[in-house]
Length: 251
Image (tube, rainbow, N blue to C red; front, side, top):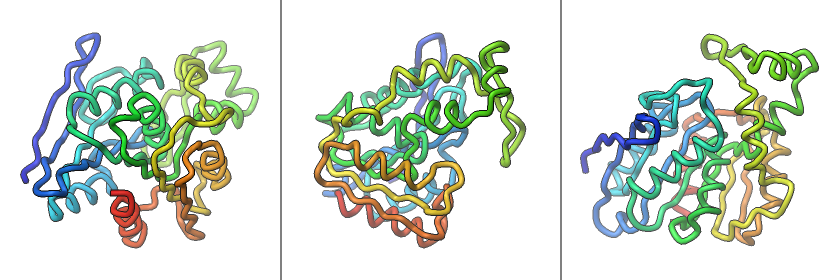
């Protein structure tokens, strides 16, 4: 089936860019919704690989860009976890049909968990790639040196260097808003099957963070695959094949 481009209207005159591929046959019964990572977009390697797989196998597949990401509108410095969670729920509610397998990469893993908590009747399973739940606190704020924390507190933001492009703002708004969505300090009320793929050599989301996520999940059907050579992106041919295998295992 051909891919359809959608634009979902959001509060404040903003729009979310969405791409949706209808399924065919029995494979259409359960769709796959891809939730990307922090500062990434729906044209990345994993998203495009899954789209090609969906086209080949007749699977329904949806991908999108969050507020201030990719082709969606929005000012980066106004972005929050609240807004990105609402984006994920809007796409799930308005651009997909029937049960969905949520595939969340890095920050998208956190969004997938929050979406599963909010819409348990719509989420059949989760496949999480280096899930970065609570990253604004556990992987940012708690690791920042004092001068970075002071800049955020007094100036409202800190310009973080990036290996992939120009510096980007980490705002006080983002950090403070993220705290209300923390899920790792208590049991996570998600009971569907969960598959976690994690790289041992990931410099951004430590493998111990994936273990912490696994331990917090209430679901009894959780597996963690730890790749010794795996980095944060997990986008090698072997990694992508493993991702498809994980999705098919919970389909």
